[in-house]
Image (cartoon, rainbow, N blue to C red; front, side, top):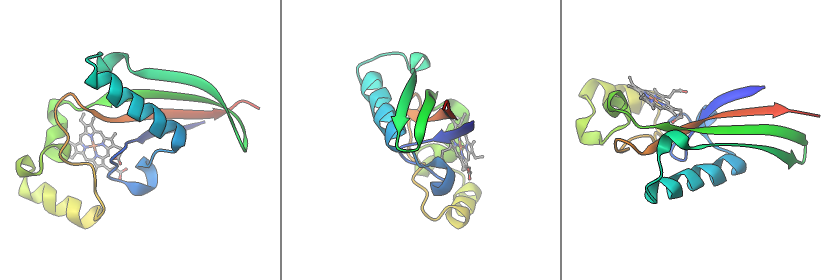
Amino acid sequence: MRVTRVSLRPRNRVLGEPDSWEQKNLLDFERRLAKGEKIETFEVSQVVNEPTGRYYRYLKAIPMGQPCLACHGPVAGIPEGVKAQLASDYPHDRAVNFQLGQVRGAVSVKKSID
Ligand code: HEC
């Protein structure tokens, strides 16, 4: 079983980049949030046929909370030391400028069921 975190704007390109199923559902989470639905209810599970076999897939939204702002919030509010560390460790960082309550990403589970 693969358990990971993904995001439409990942910090870690290697671990955080969503595949097409994850992208589609993350976009759906954002559409539902824009319509005023509660982020706590955003989860989806599905059996999906892929070229390499059948998989159980699960995705649950991770909301942006107050403590997350220090590292994922508007750049102006991120402490200088954190900014410098992020710039050196994650030169392609896209995971800043999130607002409180937005979809930061999702927990993703993928399990082969063949
Ligand atoms: C102290 C800084 C810090 C704080 C606070 C923080 N994060 Fe992160 N976050 C990181 C770093 C660094 C990574 C990249 C980790 C890695 O290399 O896999 C990351 C990665 C993630 C990822 C994985 C996808 C990606 O972008 O690579 C998610 C989802 C995430 N954070 C959500 C949150 C949420 C939600 C909170 C608040 C509850 C939070 N983070 C608070 C630093 C932080």
